[in-house]
Every structure is written in structure tokens, then in C-alpha cells.
Length: 464
Picture 1: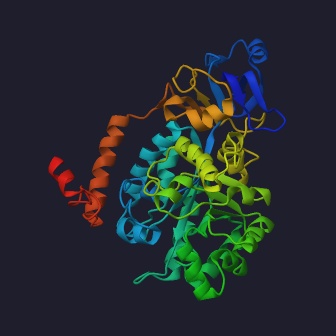
Picture 2: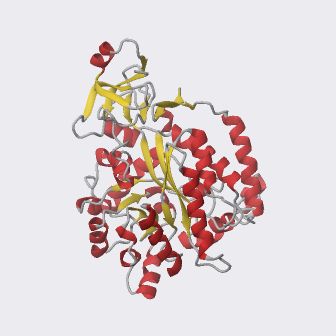
Picture 3: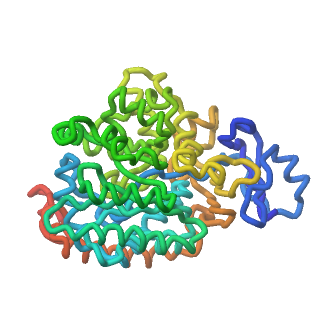
């Protein structure tokens, strides 16, 4: 054993193991979970192992951020009054035209710190950009690999815009990304479709064909906003979920962000095709997109995961914010405090996310033989000093300040609340300069004070 991680509670998220009071997790030298059980038994069996935790905290699986856009890591905090389509035009698309691979790497490393410090060990990224030919998307892989995070990376291809290059340029980026990921033991590839409405029929067909040929899974967005469904019905005669099924996309393994504006037929299609849904409550509220029918999807057997969404639409990568909002949003939307409970929400952020991504044989629960993606929450914090119900304590009370230790694949990535091997002052200085340069090149002066007046009110400008 390399370490025994002990807590007042171990929330294994494994149905057979359950929640253990005064439990522990033993991490083996090969980076796997050796055993999960009562702390006294593990300590007696392995007296040579390092013991981490004073027995007052909560041990849980590393959380899985099932949907984000690492291409937005340097452009957070803009466009708060915009709907989704307005936000694309005001913030995301201008930055996406000029972002570089190096800026992708820097931004990814910056937000990887935020994710690790909020208990995220796996992230499912869709990098979206229009700087074709610049090999931008592999920058996300560079950053995740440098930070020792587990990840899934895709390029969110969209070519239905003026001046878009030929289809071959988009397919080339998919293949280049897959080649960059191949030697990385902790990172998987998915082929991406940004949106059904944003992609030509030719590129859609080639994407599905490539998925079939190479056995690639898919990352996309579906039924995010009402305007999307209206335009889809006018164009195709049905919504984007039905169009995805018609095009054969749902015959591949798919995880789809949002799935808010679903008909009963849509939900049936998602369930029959085994589509995983990534729920992003914070971003959905900021953009005024709507409320995902999480309880309805789960009743039909759809695997629902939890995501932060992009760093510019959330505008953070903090999983504890997503946890709490996921619970509260369902309760207030249905006017029913029993609409969803804390254990369900935590399952969405752990094992549910792993199932939706098809990686539940490796991660998602504290199960002997799985990889050791483990989080220890500190019981010596105001949030967790008293633990009446550990699930409610994690979902409603805990914050990123409670994260004391994090292991990814058995390697300690957070110790004492800080990311191992990262000089944060240096990284933030580098990221700040990169963000300024990107905002200026993208012409974001109407949104960012780095590039112009931004959107500050007149009195705020005087104070600034």
C-alpha cells in the first residue's frame, strides 16, 4: 500500500459497499484501489502504509466534470446578459477565431487547478474554435497531461458559418487530436459535433462515418435552448434529437450536453440509444436556457451526469457549485423539495458521470480494482465540523475550501489543499497576460476591460 485514506465517512458510491462510517480506502502502489472497509481493519492489516486523514472528514470518489469547454478558460466573466446565441456572437466566436494552442494549454492548466481543488479528477472537454489549421485542440491535452488529470477531449466541429474552410480541415483536426491523445494513459478521445444546427450535412455524415470506422464515441450538445428546437423544426421538420437519430449519430456511444427541451419522443430516443446526458445547471441558469428534466430522464433509465459547462458560461469550474445548484434547481422548478435528493446528485457527479462516459469500469466509485481517483474532504473546516448526514453535507454544505487531498490514478495531485508541483503565482501571472492578449486580438473591447471599456456602468468605470 502507498496510502490509507481514512474518514468519518467513506461515500463509496458502490451499491455493494455503500456508505461506511469510520471507513478507509487503501491505495495500492500500482495506482488502483486495493480495498475499501472499516478503518480499524485496514490500519491493522497495513501498518506500513502512510495514513492520510484524521478520521473526521469524508472520503469520496473523484468527481467527474461531464461537460465543459476548456477553450473558454481565459474568457470567463463576460456576456452575463446574453442568451446563448447572443453570447456566441459577443464572446465565444470572436475568441475562437484567434485562440492558439499555447493559450489553450495555459488556460487548461489554470482551470485544472480550479477543478482539482474542487475535487474533480476527470473532465470531459469539448474545445470549440474557428482557428482551423493551428492545431488548437491538442493544447487542451497538453494542459491536462501536464496537470496529471484524467480527461476526455473532443473538438466541437461546426462549419456552418461564412468563410469556413472545407470539410477536410475539420476532419483533419479530429485525427490530429486523436493522434495527440494516443500516448496519454489518462486521456481518451471523442469525436465532436458542436451543435446539430452548426454543422453541414456533409460534415455530419463524415463524422458519423469516422465514428463507425474507428470505434469513436461522440460528444455533442442537444436540445439546449428553445430557439434551437424552433429552428430545427423549421429546417428538418423535427427537433435536434430526432435529427441526430435520423443521421445515425445516436447509433454511436454519445454523451450530450443539456437535453433541456426534450419531447416524450426525444426522451424515448435517448433511453433506447443509451445516450448519456450531461446536466449543467449553473450555465443553464446564467444563459436563461431552461431546466433539464433530470428526474424524468432518470426514470426512463437515461444516465444523467453533472457538468460545470464552459469556463465562460458557468463562469467557473467549481463542482461544488454545480452540485448544489443541481439539487436546488430541480426543487424550485417543481416546487417540490423531494424532487431530488443529495445522494442522487452526488451519484450524478461520480458514478453517473462515469457511466455516461463509458468509463465506469475504471472510475466513478471507490471499488477495489478500480483506479484510485480519491478525494478527502477535511473535517476540520466550518463546513464539515459536524456531519449529521454525509451526503447532504457534501452537496449543500461543502465548498472547494474543504478539499484537502486528491489522488488521480493513485498519484497525489492535491496535498493540503494545494495542487502538487504547481507554482500558482507564476501560473496566474502567465494566464493573466495570455487572457489580455487574447481579449485584445479577439476585439472583445465591448465585453472585457482588458481590451476596451467593457460593459461596466459609467459609475463603475469612474471607480476603475
